[in-house]
Length: 409
Image: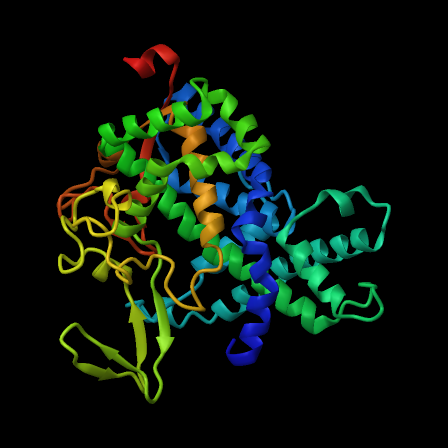
């Protein structure tokens, strides 16, 4: 999507991803995170080894479903056709890197893609049509209760029509809306899920940082972690007081960015390096890789160390980040539209999990099960990034429920 068409649709969805509006949806994020905590409690009771990425994938999918569509996908508790279709679609994607030609040119791929697209389109179309009916019913309780991003999109569409009726929703608008929702589900759930995994990875491997996170949460939400859900739901702006927690999230995104971006080059647009050399981009695809610049010692003191304090110091301090060197959500008008949602979501998860559970890594147990041999670390890290930027092995973990006594000890 390019030019005026992209600007139009970005403008339609932008209000729904405004931080103030997203704060009004925090109650739904809390509900989905409460279910995530219930799942952790069940795993803690059995002392079962689990892959954190599986849990966070379901959590982030449910959050996006609730925030974007006001739909309870409930993928954390049972199968959902939209979620299943999306995941199967991802598995059947190819990026031209398959060595096996039978995998790379599998004749079944177009059929599988068609089948999954049809499943997803039917589900999202049903959600849109149901919401249209509710918006047309002025007495509907759902009309008053829902504040999803889809509602804002439909309201924007309605405001541009003279009939003030949505019953004749045109197919072009419906198709574009449906495609945008699929894009949010695909790109938003996987990237945020990987970042949440790395938050747990960092807190597990840096107990001093975990202690400081817990102290901040005690200060803002009080000593009883089970009251935090109600407190956030009642006043989500409490999350803005979590300065150290926010710094931890930003440092995770610096060291383990979950996505990179590409742009088409064009005549007259050059990439200029620090020495002033110009690199024309015409006929090239420019790939913006966060891992490269965000660990570059030219711009970052102690580039490979986890230092949340760099996000808390004042400008002029040697640790203070240089403008333009931090780009986990990209820069410019095409930056990530969902970055505010991701930040709110990660803060909620940290508040509701960090003081209730002790997460420990299960790589050694997984090695024994799989009888792994050979190299298991990269630059000294066991949870190094693989494939779509998730931790190796999808972060195998154990969970323990914390009581007040064993937490203080």
